[in-house]
Length: 554
View 1 (cartoon, one colour):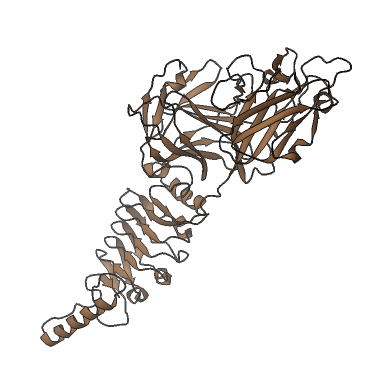
View 2: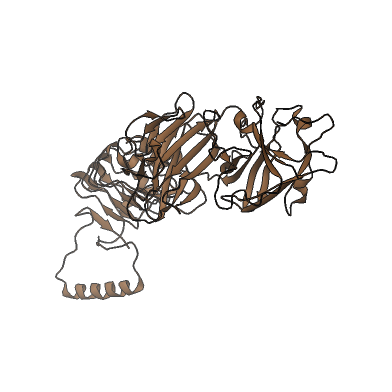
């Protein structure tokens, strides 16, 4: 986990694998991630790539863990988080990596590198609901997971407000500047929120193909009023394409689709129309007749020239390959005009583990330990290295394994709130104080507390755990008597090495040391034969109950 504090302007720009702070040609201040305790930093060299942030990266092991960056945010505020990946054959293996990226408990995307020298970009728009977020890499299926940059951009007001924002994130699929005079994107400082508006002149596979004849680029230097809605940058709205032959047509692939999404188009009248000229047109989507009903009249809808009008759909289903057309109406003298477009896909948020806040409280008590810095949700999309979870949609923690981790202080009381806990391994540490009341952990089967410095009585509340089958408390400083209920349970119990502890009274036959808590029919048969032979020999004596502090019942 790497914690980054939000800058005053709401921007965080993290140069992964970098060593120094620097300011780039756009005026953005970049910070290295050199404080992160996981992964390895390395340099790469890519022809024609001179930006400093793309000369380094950080890579991580291809194991079962997740590796997280934690960023501070302002709760109930919308943000854009952007992660970029430039492979550059950093490992000299020419194996294109494939791995997952997640935001908290939610799977964000699968990163698939298909070209060593092309930057892959993933962007997500989200409403912050906590003071921090975690961006995590995990589940590498080929190569090593890595990251080049991580950026956080804060939005103001109601930008990208949707009625679904508490249940869904928005994954950016397309953000296009139409009418651009070159292939360069428009971003900060022209866009104060540093959104990246790709040029419609960009040449890449299945991107804005099938362009209609008569499509022409136009531009203006007049200021555009963009003070409404999503506030696209003025520079984007000062260019457009027009369909001189009466239509605009395009086809493009939408990353992440098919699925439901958010789609808006941006219009501003930037041509001088004659007194009798009109510009009216409709959006036409194949097989979606209901979408094609509304007529766009930019000057009328925007209430004047050089003003933003942004019709759109907050919830619409799109295929992976989107074909669309703007066609002029019969009574229009001018062809359609289009300045910009945005399409985002809804990503269902995961609620995360039911035990997330509880176990985070436990980890905070040992904040300097490496295991306590893993970040993200304890269970999703993959669990922390010292935690196991069940398979519920909202998982619960079923196992905690912190053996020999140099833990000091008392056993955290929050552990007793983990109602789904089945196994607890805290052996081989320096824990002190009394054993807390685990009555609420009714599923608990295995407790390993041996080789610590625990004091006080062995609590009688342990008798109330109906599923407890294995209890190891040897080599502590416990005192008092062993509760009789523990001696009579179907339980493997070891309390040796506690010189001040004594056994309590119990019911039942003489003590026998038996491996396991249940015995099958074949084992019973063998035990019966052995008992018969021993009785006839009459030479062996059985140890008394608790003589060695180890008790086991079948």
